[in-house]
Length: 325
Image (cartoon, one colour):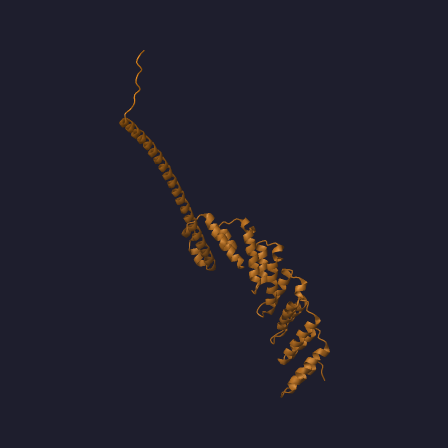
């Protein structure tokens, strides 16, 4: 039989060397894998940083645009108060903003002024910045126009005229004038107007009609008191009585007969105390004051004159005018 070949058995030194070689190969592969992962992570970080830089840059630009826009709004507001400086400032060149940003700034300034009842430059700015007609019908402008009406109604001269103008210029619907806020402003504005000697009473009457103020409000004690006060102002004037205005107030605010007689009696007594017998008689006749009431007022004035000296001529003039013996 052939001799069986002996199987090779590596020595311990060879086994150790082989293991070292295997470990080195494994380590090299591990390092290669780690390097690839690190490179991927590094690329991810760079991408994230770049995106962050872009976002930061865009946010910074947006903040800058907003700052410029706000400055331009103030510039427009100041310019409309001082037109000469506004025209000379070349604001478009100064801000170097896009047309869209300029329009946004102009719209904001226009709305702000309109909400304070100032329409003087609204349409000039609309034209200057090429703002489309649709802007007028926008909710923002309609709300600002309504607020502008309210602003004028609170104790400002010519409120009803301006309110009517705003309504027409901005096509405000009837619902806007019928809103709770506008109705309240109209009510308070009308009462303030009646009490204010420096304001035209016709403005209060126009408010009543323009805003369709309800009859129950017109006949309320607060309005009746204000109307009586205004009526007396029109009759209580030594240099001339505004009879037509007093009669109009009486009719428009449905003053009761008792209220009218109260006002007229005070007015007659006031004119007699000033020696204006002619005006006292005119008031008596225009308001159909009963003879007995007029004579009572005249007698009270005569009694005061008799307590003083040298008033016979004045007494005789009053007697004659009021048919007293």
